[in-house]
Length: 198
Image 1 (cartoon, rainbow, N blue to C red):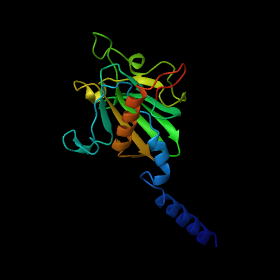
Image 2 (cartoon, one colour):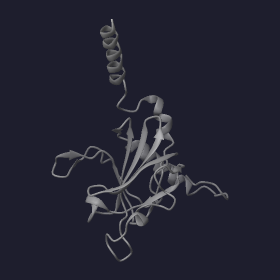
Image 3 (cartoon, rainbow, N blue to C red):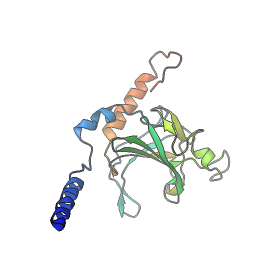
Image 4 (cartoon, rainbow, N blue to C red):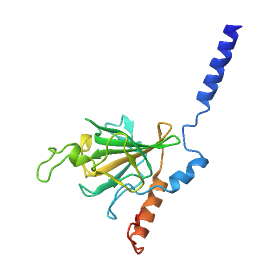
């Protein structure tokens, strides 16, 4: 009897795992449609480079590269909690924000340069003040700065931006394009004291 019960529990567990969605469903479009553009510069440039071949042709691009001037502020695309601040040889300085409900945003190749001194910066040149693991952030809050750290060294300064749902990178170009259009419009709206332009 116990073996039979364990088998049923195991089958239910496997079925539940297999039923987890790997891509965003329609119920999550509300989150996607309210994203803040991640770079605080109207002169930013991006195109749909999702799934482009990278490296020596051995990998594809799982994000969106947004080019801008080195040191341009990067902002959180939505409310959340910072769950990673780190450095790696490939990614350079990067951070991730957990937005709940399976959503995570990833910001890669942050600035590692001091003015006049390439690669001599560190966490203080990559991340905004008061950004640490566990920090609660709001959409539009400054979290870091555009750079070329990691394997982006020598390229045009840019932010590699990813949005993951249940750990799976999502093709989000249309949503980021829409967030950029909202950003453009917001700059032409009269400001009030304390009004977040995002």
